[in-house]
Length: 386
Image (cartoon, rainbow, N blue to C red; front, side):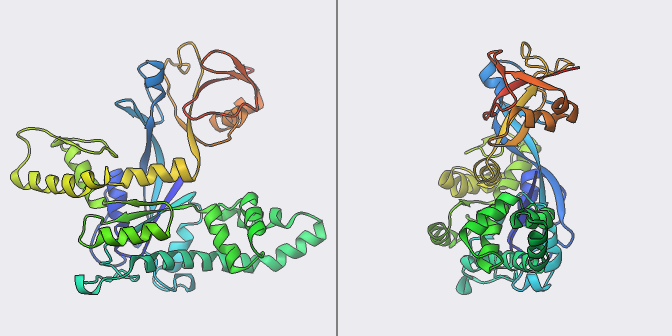
């Protein structure tokens, strides 16, 4: 899975990437700090199946921290987008090309209004309306998609007539490199005229679900802007990437006890300076107590689990021990789309499993078939001929 961090220049994308991953990325307060895309690995976090089963797990493809399973996802911080990006302005061509394979997007929005649509700083007396940056980003992606669809339409329509094949299927083949499926295209066709700009807008919403991380929520004026943005848009989360980064780094150095997404932290006595205590107190009072978290982990979790509709499942080789062949308990946590069947999971684990598939066992050791629809948090043994 690939999640793209998008937004205008200087909105806090690189800070958010570092806050999610502690990766070594360049952060600076000027436009186009990010020229080449930064890719790293973050984690979505959910209750681990070990809690419900009362066992100690030994993760292999993920990790378990205090009964929470951390499942890796790829994150991509791309160059900032400016008005006219679809025509090549700024680093527009690179920005849009980097988004091709993203499954979903987190729009990092400077909700303080202290950054305009070109990433230039504004003053307290000359604040920028953050809703304009939402329009810019969505319109530029829409224009980019519209151009690609329009370029392929004539050829696809001709082929569909000649081969008597559904147009949506052929168009999906042409757009597969963008992560667009036949179902995405059919949905857009039901709602708008094929090839129109509205069609491109719906296609973007269907194929690149986006959540807005209203960043810099702790800055003056941000709360008022956030209220307006939330009224006009769904899926908006108040966030402070700098606060999350400070907490993650303090925890990394043993100064505090904190896990991503927590509503508070605990100071380790005698390890903090007066300045550090003051800075952490500001985060606690102005971010955590006001909003319940920094919003950074919540934005990633919400995109993956709520908007993209992924669930976590745990395939094992032995249901009696909940383990793999080597005895590792609940070794692998897989992210799969809601509605995935047992046989589809078998194919993801190993192609031989799908080819030699027999069935499966659930936690009650009852047999389940190929069409068994997996549930969130389910542990399942896959049976196949050896």
